[in-house]
Length: 298
Image (cartoon, rainbow, N blue to C red; front, top):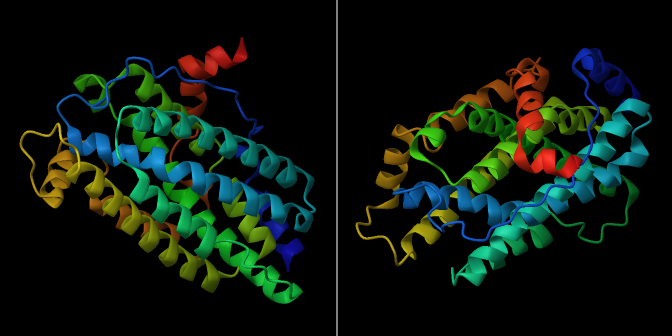
């Protein structure tokens, strides 16, 4: 079955790009904690990336590395290797700002305990030794992460398209991190899906793991953003977080709730493939001008 699924994924070869990790770095010196001026909730919404993604992307990179021995398609193997490298770089880059938050006395310990528990205890290896069960659990995690990668890719495109960030004056270093990361997510948007299809490819597993990924990610994201917003002592007029969320979404500073449901609908179409979504040239164009990506080439 795996070889048949692998042949299927290669039908999309005309979009294939060389996936390589870029050794970027970011200097957070002087970056304001409220890097979206006058928008504390929107700032904390994106702060979730810096808390959740380092652990999540390292775990995902580990799972896809485990899948490599099951993938015989040479080009897909190369793409997975590049994907794993990019995800490791994303984790390190966001962890740098996480450390900046800690250094500036932002209390994130309770959040980190929850994230670390989810990654290690829920999505860990669990010491499974039975070969069949181990393969099934690997396929389940590939499905969860493939669904999560679809959302990071479409959010990445949203970040590249969002002119409102430029208008309101988001800190340029943070804006480059968000858009560089978004561009690379768009660049490798096919890889996780193709690897899942190659190793398993079952539609029922895809549907189930999509609901698991969406429910878990949404719960973690909203609860973490609400915690950060609620504990931000610099906020002078604190609205209930659902109202703050709606306001930020109306201002086009974060994606709206309908965005999540639309993407679930698209992803669950039986004939779906990530290459059908958006314009991948946006990623190529931004990576050509990204200050961090250009500095990494020097």
